[in-house]
Amino acid sequence: MAPLLSSLHMRNFSFPLHGELLTQSTTSVMQLQTQWRNPGEILSLLLLLAPDVIQRSIAQLAGQRLTPVAFSFGWVAYSVSALLTTIGDRRLMPSADYKSKVIVAKSGHIRQNESWVIGRLLRDFERRQSPLVADKSSEHWEALRVSIFKIIPGSEPGRPIHDYVWFSGLGIILLQLGLAVVPLCLSGEWPVLVITTCGTLVALSHGALAQWREEKWECPKTGSPTVTITQGNGSRHAMVILGSDSGLHLEILARSDGNLSSSFSTRIGTAVQAMLWMVLLITVAGLKQGSWYLLAIGTIGMLHNIFVAQSPRQPKAFGIHTELVATISEKKVSKVLAKVEEQYPLVGLSLLPVFYPAGFRAPQDEKKFWKEASKRRHKAIANICLDESNANANVQEQKGRVEERQRACVSAVHQPSKDASDDLNVVDDTLRGTNSEDG
Image 1 (cartoon, rainbow, N blue to C red):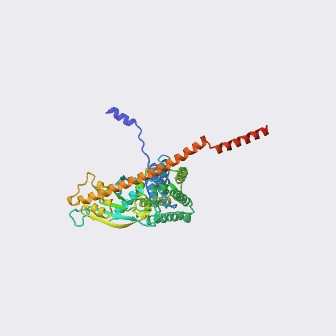
Image 2: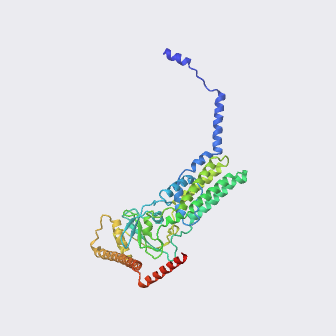
Image 3: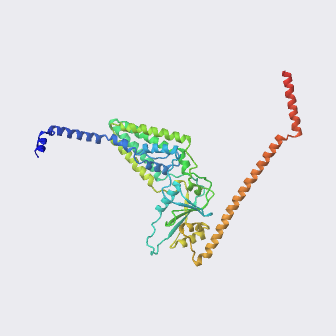
């Protein structure tokens, strides 16, 4: 113990005096006060948060030149992400975030949906529906509810209407600009207004890129066959959109196989916008006054973008102009599909492998009905094959005519007619005569 006591005795223990403690405490308090008066550093970090929210907000509102997505946190990170995707994947629209299938009635083809628009169309439709009874023993039990829609004649496909979600974007932008004016009026601090205005303009310029509209409705707009949109077996909702000669081709839209790639102007535009957001980030990091106003403006924009990204919307807001025709439901799925098949041929039959993936064993009293439906399907497929054969025959016939004309042209070149030979001789004589005169 003696060595230990002697070592402790020899050590020099110094304790801060009362004045030093008071000075350190005062310094810490002043630092906290400075940070809370002007949280500029945290603002620059917040601009890097939640880029996915920005992408989904633009995807919701894109469709026309003006896409009112507010200036908010996350734009800097998203601008870099958008630049990388336009160079790599060459796309701007997000993938479908709600699983669904698109079933073509005539052919029975089942396609896994990859389109953002169709996924949101089904999700928002299910949210608008009245709740289904969960108790199977209830008299109001619905095993499956099939809603029938038709395309409104004369509507312009791929042109969305302006709903409350769209107009709310304009309102939030005006609110942000109004809030940015306050420090200018109170103390003459103009940087907040300049940063908010520039951020809003860059955000609007990104939503105005034409590729958003091209990707969102990446399909022909000359009509579509009758299709059913549903999540499949286990789901109790299904949307049937009857075929028409106008509107979006929903089967092709569901594929979204990436045939459309970003243009050179899109890549240049996203690169310029990314640089502008970096400049804005550096400017915000050096802001000494008015940080609380900018923090409030960014928070309002972030909350609104979250609202936009998740808000349910009508089909017309997605550029698909439909109206409800009928709703069919029963206590058994097979009864529902039979009713649908009876009223809309080939539709109910196309849904059998979806809701009965292990195979459907028809009751005795329904066998004749489903056999007749199956015959209609085979006849429809035969007609499709016949139409394709005729189209191929026409193509082959046209190709044969072109080849025949080519052979005739080649023959005329290699075996000129007598008159043509005489003409060539005359030309040769003229050239020889000219040459001799020149000589």
